[in-house]
Image (tube, rainbow, N blue to C red; front, side):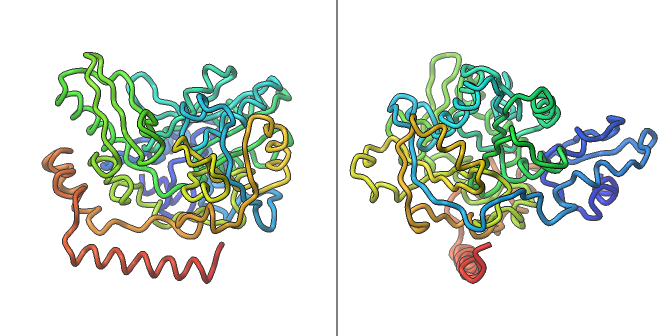
Amino acid sequence: MTDSLYFINSGDSCSGCGACIQVCPRDCISMHADPDGFDRPSIDFSACVNCGACRKTCPYSKTSFHVGGRTAPLFYAARMSDRALRLGSASGGIFRAFSGAVLRRGGAVAGVRFDPDFRAELTTAETPEARDEFCLSKYVQSRNERAYRDVKSFLEAGRPVLFSGAPCQVAGLYGFLGADDENLFTVDFICHGVPSPLVFTEYRKSLERRFSSPVKSLNFRDKSEGWAPMRLRVEFENGTVYSRTLTEDPYFRMFLSGGISRPECYTCPYAKTLGRESDLTMGDAWRAEVLDPAWRDNTGVSTLLVNSPKGEALLEEAAGELDFKVCEFSVIDQHYLHHPGILHPDRSDFFRTFHKKGIAAALDRYSGPRPLLRRLKTRFLKIIRQLRGKRNPQ
């Protein structure tokens, strides 16, 4: 697989976006999980004709695929006006408004859903009901087997498309298409790393063993007790409910600490404020209540960066369903708009224990409080990254 990566982009970096496998005219590239569960491309060189399509489309082969963005984004705090829709979504639920605007025009929406086995997959939807599966957070890396091809088909048919995904997936889409399209709208999110699908699957299975039942539903941003603190809620077929906050659940803690992210996430080129790949960027707006007392109801508020004229146009089209306010960057600022997530000092040890002793032993040992020396080292690295980010906001 390393040889395949060098063949594609002259390096060993891969975000797993799936652009190379979908652009290949001979279908001779496929994705295979590495030992830690992250998909990487593998080439059948007996079928390869060395056309160069994979090299041209790979996001790691170019500095940026950014198309016609603003010199600086417009900053907003926003949320769905409808309280029920807001409660059924992550953050302020604003993705519903943007995707609804495109669907009403006869378009399609690309996003991430869980399949019946709770594997995250990037796919497309043409109805509000199918789109609703995209509206909740999935804190695990998604697989993209054909979404780029489907988006291209919709665009060739003259239909508008809203593509939503991680920043690297948006870059992969532009690389796959080779150009922008007036009917294409892209939205990414403020990302601090995508966790291992293998770790997530093993954690889900451990919960099923613990509660002697298959998982029926899983929500990483359950709002039954409010937007904050973030809460994981898992319902099982036997009626049991597992509900834990981000500080109580070991998988949640490990994800937020950066301990199970894809290796390339720690050097992500898309963790920036200026020159983002997408038309719109979404995230949480934890300080937005200062803008409006009515927003202090703990139902969720979103950060919104408008990065392009097309993003402005889509916001104007969706405005009737939204409450939104222009704000200073300080209100919605987040670390991951300046720099990638910081490598967890115990990441290698976590995966070593995970492979040797299983998910329970790895989480028990590394998801809790770290020894003082390691905490000080992490804090020092975080301060250094913050200082670098302030000197260079891009």
